[in-house]
Amino acid sequence: MAGWRILSIVVACLVLFVVLEMMRRRKLREKYAGVWLVLAVGVVVLALVPQAADFLARITGVQTPSNFVFLLAGVVLALVALHLSTEVGHLEEEVRTSVEEIALLRCELADAQRDLEERVAALEAKTAAPDNVDGLPEVSPARAR
Image 1 (tube, rainbow, N blue to C red):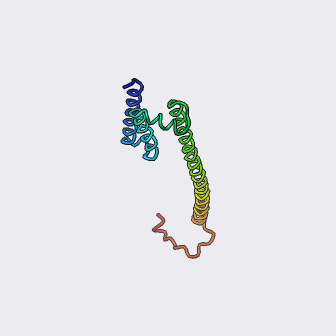
Image 2: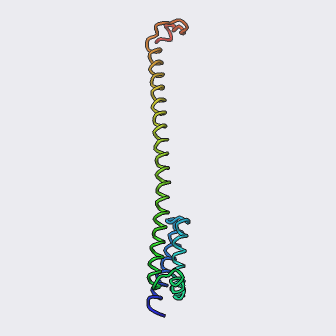
Image 3: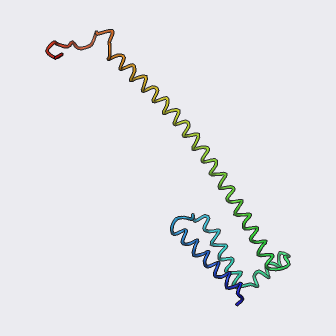
């Protein structure tokens, strides 16, 4: 076996191990792990069966299998970048919505605090020095002591 084939098999197995370990530790979500697992398996297949790269290069009209592998890597990177761009767009929308909701809740909280302060002030004014003593219980001198 050629040295590059052994190296590519070792690298693909290492990628598989790292992806599985990251999934086990919950550091990588399953929807992203799938892409990395497929890539690692693809590298293993191309390393074990180099004729597959020759065949695919001939079908697509690429001169050499190595150029085909570079083309494939570029396409994969472009797809990953596109996917991550859509994820960023969704996350930006969620952040914007959350910020708007927080701003509305802060306004509601400020209104409720203002209303509460007004009620407390009104009750304090009413109980501190009542102008109208009608309806208030009379205090006997014995109780006042």
